[in-house]
Length: 264
View (cartoon, rainbow, N blue to C red):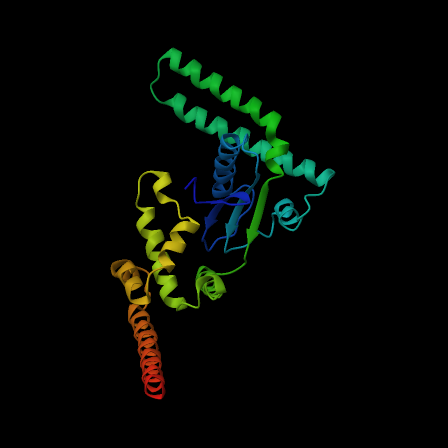
């Protein structure tokens, strides 16, 4: 949703995720393209009265020659002064170049004179908006460089997710089962063409948690698990183990009730 991930809560957070082996700089095509897309999202959501953040997140690290981005990524308070001015100037440079690249690509196609003039006017107006908004926009950009290989990053993310799923909010349900259910739901919804149909909400999570562990097994997407190498047999074993414990507890409760009936 909106490029990669859109989180709606106390803040509005747009995250572009890049899982790469190569390092990044402010001259990387992926970074420049992301900055442009973030700016368009910034303009679309500018009137919303909520804190907005644009995050470029990657497993890899900053190129050794990239000094400005290194300072910026470590500058959590976004210093007022020379560095802030340098950040804004670089973002302005990137945006103006990206606008011109897109303008020229459209002009290279066979267009009528009227269409060409419209493209040129639109590009000039957007550049003018960049000049007026670049400071406000630049202050909202955040960088996250993990400095990990893709494999290490995936393991780290999975461990973080599993830790979060141990929270009391999830009612002590089997972590691997919840992981499988939620990732299946994400995959299913990601196939929808309308962005609103790809939303995942607190209500959806609450509704899922109302089901028993055995019912949740129906949510699991077996084909998808094979694709991403999740051990479905491990999930099934854990479900059976939980069900055995439930049955055992039921047996003990019934035995106690029978004993009480005899005593009464």
